[in-house]
Length: 447
Image 1 (cartoon, rainbow, N blue to C red):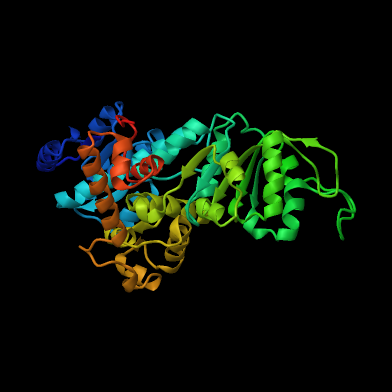
Image 2: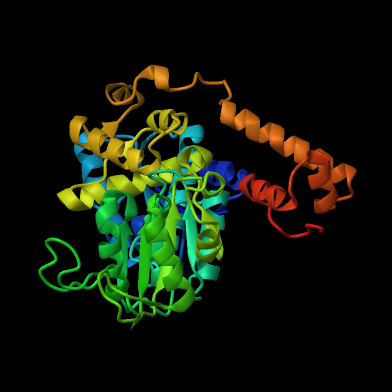
């Protein structure tokens, strides 16, 4: 639990908050003046509950000192005589939020949880920032699993196939793999295979010699040569034409290529990271994708979950995007109310994180006032798109049913994965994959 310092000159406030938060498991210290609070802040606290008005001065001065000297500490301001001007000033000085007295315990506990999540996110982003230029935001089990896979695969030269729906952040994963590899100082070259006409894709990837085709007035290096020594990211690799697949396979096998219209072998040292939103197993069955190329690309497969399977990350993502937008406009981040965040958690987001980012930007621009409430979402998402509260989404019900069936099979077969897979009518590899998707860890699995 977080450590909390309460700074207030009202003895009854200190006593009641210390008792209530202590019963919730928080480690609580109290200071009865700004000077005492300043002295106690020589020790580190996760969160400070700070009154605005003191007989000896203003708590806003101490807030400014905390923000400047201990930016990793979250500050929640309190006041029984708050004005909008005071609340705005506190927010500009870096306060996480503002509470009016008398304090409502339920509201305070929600704020403390949100502040703890925000501080954890900031700490994780600071930890990753030296290696990863763009943070992968989230604390759900699904995201932690992806981060662990990146940490394991990143420092190697193994090829990675990233699978996931449109808008889930597959390129972000690819860039994190590159940034955590020994190739980080070399180029990261991204190619969207679906955006390039079939007649030009080979020239785009492998380059061409002068006169190779009409309009080729001079020789041109391809993306493989541009990425030499670094990482080549092939987005939507499932859309490659059969000839391009064949030539790509040769490069992966032999480490050399030739330009279109040329016969000179060119050695390239490139780590290939590919991504697709297609089910390549189905494409292989219909002869739409080469099986041998699939196995060359998918040395390490990483699946990026859709946003509907990590809805608990939505508040963190909203805060992240709101802060990004505030930085771009040199303003303060807009605050989404708990009701608005809950509405967003219940939306299925067919466009995944990309859709959420666009939605946050639209709300920030088009909503007047300092806060964004649940009713403001009506302008961007019809109410019919939200499942009624208290009802279970079909996807959640299916996941729960699958979990119960797997647990029952494992129990019946004494924990043996092989026998449990047979009982369920699945390949063992399919059962492993499904269990990972449902949140199981590999610790204790039996063959």
